[in-house]
Every structure is written in C-alpha cells, then in structure tokens.
Image (cartoon, rainbow, N blue to C red; front, top):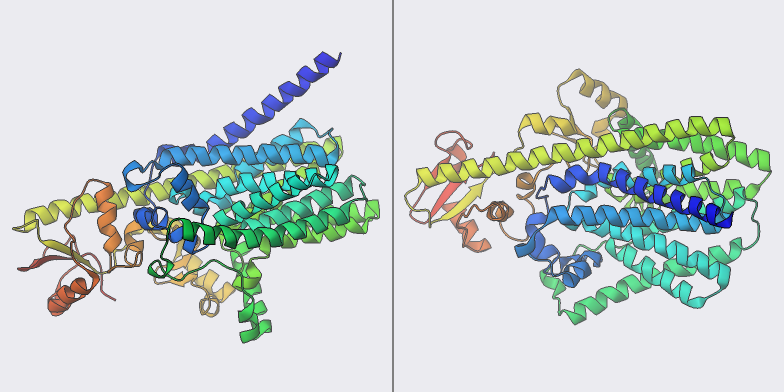
Amino acid sequence: MKTFTRKIDIDKRILVILFTIVASLAAYSYLAFHNTVGIDDTELSRYVCGGWEPQVNRWGTYVIGKLINISDANFMPGLYEIAGAMFLVAAALIFDVLFDKVLGGGVPVWGYLLFNGLLVTGAFMEEVMIFYLHNAVCLAFFFVAESLLSLYYFYEKKHWWRLVLSIVCLSFSVGCYESFITVYLTGICLILLARAYNMQKSGCLTVIIASIVSVFAAIFLRSLWQNILVKAYALNLSELGTNVHGISLKYWFLNNPFMILKDMLVRFFIRYVVNAVYLPQIMVFLITLICFIGFTIYGSVRNKNLMITLWSVGFIICPWLLSVPEMDPNSYRICQGIMLFIAGTWFLIYLWSGKKMRVVISVVALCCILAQLYELNRYFYNDHLKYKSDVEYCEALYEDISHSVSDMDKSVILIGKYEMPQKIREKNYVEAGTEEYEKLSKFCRLEYVDDFYKYVDEYGYRLYDVSYVDPLSWARYAGLQYENAEIFDFCKIHGIELNHSYSKEEHSRLVREVETEIKEMPVWPEDGAILETDEAVYVKIGRIE
C-alpha cells in the first residue's frame, strides 16, 4: 500500500513538472525561435562585457557573462531565452516545495498546476525578456525562491547556515534586478498568509525577524559584491556613466509629498485600471485584486483571524514598494512581485474553497493563464516585426549607399531621428487624432499626467514602457558616442559593414560643415537623401530635431 501511494505521489510530481515546462515553452518558444536584437543588445560589449551592469548595481548579468564567456562573437539569444524559461520553471517548482513545507503537505496537485501555470506565463515579464540575457530576471526568480525556501528551513530546524544561504541567494537575486526585493517581501507575506489560513499561529515573529535581517543583509551584500567585482576586474566606473539603480527617499522631502502622492494615484489609475481595456495582463491583475479583496474579507470574518487581514494587506502592498522611492507606480518591467501576487492569490483561493467553488476557480485561473499566454506571444510577435523591419531597412540603406557613392571607404554619417513604420508603431499606441484617443485623453486628463511621465508623445498614448521604440529609434540616444552610433553596431551584427571610423568630436565637426545642406535634404528613402563630400557620406534617415 505504501509503495502504491508513493507511486501516485511520484506520478503527481511528474505531472506538475511536465505541465510547468509545457506552460513555460508555450510562453517563450516564439521568442526563443524568432531571434531578435533588442534595443540594448547592440551595446553588449559595454553593458555586459565592459562592466556597465556592475556600475548600475545590476551585476548579476555581468557575473553570468564572465562565467559562460559571453561576448559579441557568441551572440546566441535563442539559447538564453530557453535557459531563462527553464530557470523560471525551476523557481515555480521550488515554490511548490515551499508550500508543501508551510502547509504540511496535502496540497491538491491541481493547486500546484494553477500556481505554476500562472507564474511561468506571467505577462509582466514581456518587457524585460526582449533584452539579451533578459537582465537575468529568470535566474533572479530562481534565487529568490531558493532564498524563501532556505529561510523557512531555518525557521523549522534553526540551522544558521540556512539563514546565511537565504541572504546570499537574495543578494544575488537583487543584484540581478532590484525589483526582486519586493518579490521576496511578497513571498514572505504569502507564507504568513498561508500559515494564517492554516491556523498556524506560532512562529510568525521568527519568520518576520529573520526576513527583516535577510533584507538588510542582502542589500549590504549587494553593494559589497559590486565593490568586489569593481576591484577584481579593475572597472573604471567614471568612464561608464553615473546611473545607479539604488533606493532613495530624499525627493519626498524636497517636494510636496501630498502632490507626489496625488500624481502617483492618478498614474496608477491610468496604468493599472484604464489600461485593462487594452492589455490582458492588467485585466488579469484587476480581476485577481478584486477577487483577493473579497476572499480576504470573507476569510477574515469567517475565521475571526486578524492575522489574515494583516498579512493580506502586506501581500497587496509589497509588490508596489519600489513605487515609493521612484515616486511613480511600477513600470511594467519591474512587476515581478505582481506576478507572484497573481499566482499566489489563485493558489490560496483554490485551497480554501469548497469542491464546487474549486471548479469555478480553476476555470477562471485557466482563463487567466490563456490571457497571459496570448499577451506574451502577441508582444513577442510585434517585437519580432519591429526587428525584421529594422533589418530590412538597414539592408536597403546599405544597397542604396553602395549604388550612390563613389567610395564606400568613406565614413558614413547618419543624421536625423529614424521613425518606425506606422503599421508597426500603431500596435503599441492609441493613435493621436482618433476618436478613441480623444475620449481617453479627456477622461484621463493625459496632458496633466504627461507633465511628469511620458504617456503621450506625437504619435498618441503609448501602452508600454519599452516596446514603443525599436533598435534603430533607440540608437539615436543609446551609448556614449555620437547620434545614431548604435545603428552601425546593429548593422554589423547582420553582416552590413558601414565605415564610421571617427571620434565624437570629429563627428560633430563633419556634421557642422554640411548643416545647411542637410536641413534642405529629404528623408531617406527619397531621392536626394544621400550626400557625398570629399570626407564623408551623409544620409538623412529622419527629421532633425
């Protein structure tokens, strides 16, 4: 009988693992097998290989790059997308082990399937997954899950090395992406909430104290690892820029805090309520939030347990903690804590519902999974369209230059702001001039909100933080060199060689010499957009601002 029971348990585990892998592949296969070059990928040599990541306190990617010898020569985005998806699977499975420990076993296999499916298909990952190595967020998920599990082992068995392991894992997770400090705190609230529903009243204080110690120790370690890397690899941070992803509250004291809070609430309403009309992941979040609030009220009253209310409030608030120092509601690419909130909410509701209600919960959660899958694949498809359009543009540009100039060894200078084709751009906007845009603008007072945060530009109201721009558009601003410098690196990745052997100062001099002629030239691909002089070849690729 024991052998038979053990066999059933093993079969259930295999089912959970296989389902999680399939869900992850459904989410990221299109991205993995339709390779793109993202907006920061052309600066791989500076960001990952050159040490810029440690400078901004996101040194996880830099460490990975050193361990597996990443360079411009072995640029393999597809491989790393699959690896990232598998780390996300591993993170979900570690959470399963954690829940088993917290709840003392007995969790229905369907509960694990819903949690894992919702977590690995979390559509808030879309805007960070398009970057090369995706800022190591999948690996960060793995480490934050391991940190939480180690913390709970420490609580159970009082092995101090478990607490140390938890701190080290958390420090690496936050070193990959700072938003994972909120994922960790959200996970702590999820553990305490599950214990409260399970009527486990003792030991909460130990978990809270250990988690607070872990957070402060991990933040300290994050900075320590950065300094060690700087010394070990002799990084000159003054040459890499000054942008540091740290935490500071000083601006709240330098401005009117009530006005800041008012602006934040308005922007939250737009980004996380109004956008539900356009983005499935926001609709999933809203539905989840409403259901969780109802579930919390019902659970608190029925169980007469104030702890359920307390940890529920923490569970809602923790994913948003980075909004406080940033004075702005979370941008979508740092919403990993909300992913855990969504998955954890449906997991809890499923566990503490009756048999008939569980059927309804399962249907709703499966619909959420399908909505997230749809959004992820739609986003990656649109991103790939942008990439293909940029490649075709560069190929056509090279061909035109080669037929229009007498000497291809001359330096090529690209002037102006490249604009993405409208048919691709409109997928990321509520376009200006439409009736829908006018209604949205009037309802949300977009002109007022736009004073602080760029929701609106000349094309209309943009729905995403990153996807509104493509590599060629971003190249105008990227890097520390001259205008459009990264377009040449984008071309080089695709075997298109354009000579640009000049310094920043020389670039400015060459542009000044033909400034009048350039203003009068049409924009490529119109005739007359290419100008050849004795020193250089000029191409006007967009309007001059």
